[in-house]
Length: 229
Image 1 (tube, one colour):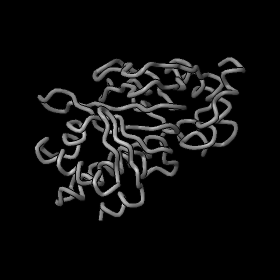
Image 2 (image 1 turned 180 degrees about the vertical axis):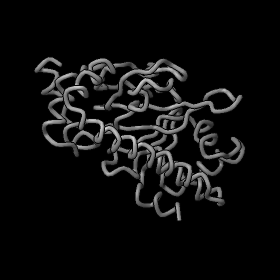
Image 3 (image 1 turned 120 degrees about the vertical axis):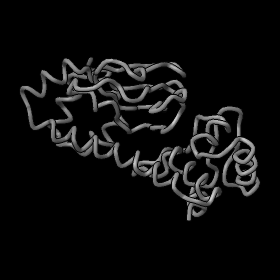
Image 4 (image 1 turned 45 degrees about the horizontal axis):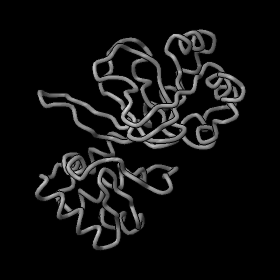
C-alpha cells in the first residue's frame, strides 16, 4: 500500500478486529493491503465465487446475501465501518458461501489471498488472529439468528433493526443508518410486507426511527434497544 494511502486509514486502526491485534500483525497486514474505493451497489465478491482474500471497511457499508435453499439470494447482515469480512475462504477449501455488495459509496482495505498466504508462510502465528476474526463474525451471525427467534413481531423487528444498524457492535456507527428498503427489512425480520410496514411506521410515530425511500435512520438508539426486550 502506498504511504499516503496508509496514512488515510484511520477507522480500521482505531476499532475492530485488526485494532486488537499486536502492532507487528497490524503493520504486516497493512503492508500487503490495497485500498478500494467502490460506488454504491458494487460487488465485492459473488455468492459461489472462487476463494479469495478478505476485506476491512474503512468507510461505508457492505451487505451480505445468501441462498442456502432454492430461494433467490436476499440481503441479510449488514456490516459497517470497522468490520472485516471474507476471511473464511483464505484456506482455499470452499467457495464463497455469501455474496458481498456495497450499499453506499465505500472505502475498503483489501488483503489479497496470494499475498496473505505468503505472509502467513513467514509468520504462521497470524492464523490465530484470523481465527479470532472468524469467531467475531460467527458471533454476529449467531446474534442475528437469536434475534430472529424472538416470537413477538415487534421485538423481532426492533432487534433486527438494532442488529443491522450496527448498534450491537463495540463501535456503533454515528449516525446509525440501515441501507435497506422496508420490504427488505421485513424479509430479514421474517415478516410479511403487510405486517412489516405498519410496524415500521409505528416505530417512526414513536420517534425511534425515520423512514426514507431506501434507508432507515435510527433516531433514538437507546429507545430502540429497549424495544428488543
